[in-house]
Length: 125
Image (cartoon, rainbow, N blue to C red; front, side, top):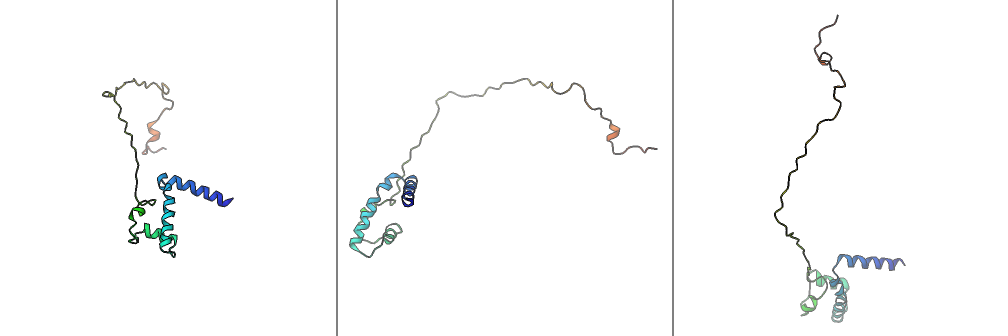
């Protein structure tokens, strides 16, 4: 059960991170690996991958088949959508609102004494 769940999650991650046309090429990879195993039975799958993807490819006159393998060619399919509104000249209109400053109490709540706040006071007797 854990193995099935792992394979399903791996399959979902592969489909999410790669383009679907590259996933469709996976059987070609296995078929080409089988052809290389017929030529050399000692080749492993990791040797096959390093030969085709890391640049140590043999000169075996199958470059057209090699280029059909997944992730050999970068195929970028992008579509861009540019929206340009067809509007006349747009101007901002300034709206002036009168600001009323009638807030707070009408009279002062505290009577301030300038003598109490000064640092230099006359001496007291």
